[in-house]
Length: 198
Image (cartoon, rainbow, N blue to C red; front, side, top):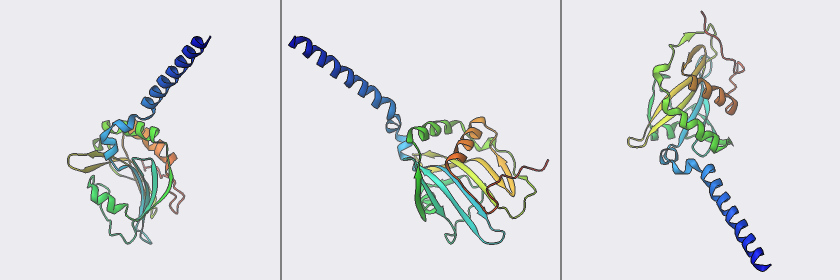
């Protein structure tokens, strides 16, 4: 009887150990990706409006799933919207005045991160007039990081407001939709994306 209990006990422990190892493997895939771990900034959504009062703020998501709010007023950050390459130091300076406001699941973030490799700014439409005036513009971006050069490439997913621009890649559009549910930017006009004039 004692041998049966011992064998049962060993089988149960072995099963739990195997289940635990399998569970660790599936839930920590991102810990084995050195490029993901080196990339500090994954997504960024920013609002700019210089029509009446200088306004420039946004939110970004880091590789740990933290969501930070930042403000660029008085920070002397005036890179044009078509500036796509940044050093890590430049981006860290951009996000210098930040406050953590939330987080998202890192596993989900990592799944979105893996989709970024196929994205390119060559899929961007031209900026189009929307007919809106003095609304400013909200731009949603993803970043691809080159660890050898420490350069981030900003991939525009969607820009809207006074003008409209979108990445025509289906993956980019899917990520932009997902990002709009995670980061909420509410400019004075209520965050409505004006449609382009045909």
